[in-house]
Amino acid sequence: MIGPFRDYKENPVLLPSTGFESKGAFNPAVIKEGNDYFMLYRAESLEDALTGKIGLARSQDGINFIRYPEPVIVPDRDFDRSGCEDPRLIKIDDTYYLTYVGNRGGHRSHSWGWATNICLATSKDLMHWEKHGLIFKPQKDWDRGQVKSGAILPERINEKYIMYFMGETEPWKTAIGLAYSNDLVNWDELLNEPVLLPREGYFDSQGVEPGPPPLLTEEGIWLIYCGWAEDCVYKVGAVLFSNEDPSVILERSDEPILNAKDWGKTFGGIDNHTVAEGLVKDKNRWLLYYGAADRACCLAIWEER
Image 1 (cartoon, rainbow, N blue to C red):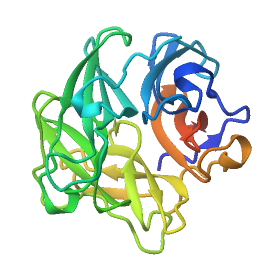
Image 2: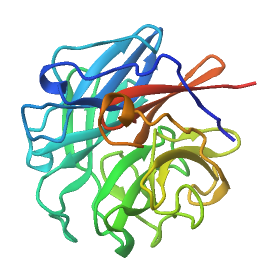
Image 3: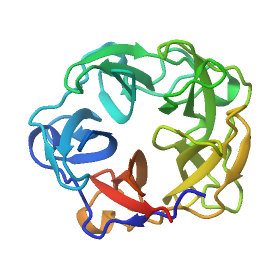
């Protein structure tokens, strides 16, 4: 089992600043390139009603990040006009692929006009991005409400790319589904049911949501996810899917792999809200980056033995 992760003792690693991130800098995606770490994060301002822009920060140690002065992705299309939220980042060959939640505003709908969906942007340098719009239309009864949190495996499985995503039929009573693609832009949901459900009596009895992009190993496909019970306390779990059939569960954590501090009581924001979205391997350490209290970015560490 992956983990357990322990909170970095000097958390947080990124706090809100001024301007476009004066309200919050949280829910980070992180990738390591050579000796540098790059973080893309959701930023909110006290000065506007947008639910997010995407900021960029850089670090040489994965802990001390220097932010760029302006956001690199902003709401400027019909599909994300009210906000660009919750980035998840992978790299294939020389291209970065970023999924994010496009907020169109309005109310949830059971048609093509719902408020939020999974959007895609690509880049060669992490600074300049091409938007590809909505990449996934809910196709089954169980996910006709809100869909979010597209976590793409960068390697092909059975000649196709796969993406785990969150769907719902009722607000925040969620499950995780599986979609397939040949080109990373057009995605189809081949299964009629989700592949990961909440479990009665566990920390994830109310809802589940994909975390960072999944990790391909000899044992299978590891997916770190967020789960919550009726108390709405977000905790982090892990599940292992089969390499041969990425819908088949081989192992699942009975207990959270991270019990983060309740940062909402430290620097404001939403109490008990821990949203993991970035995972980086650094020698024998795994660095898990998460959004804390919808306010800041924190780090948790697991050292392999």
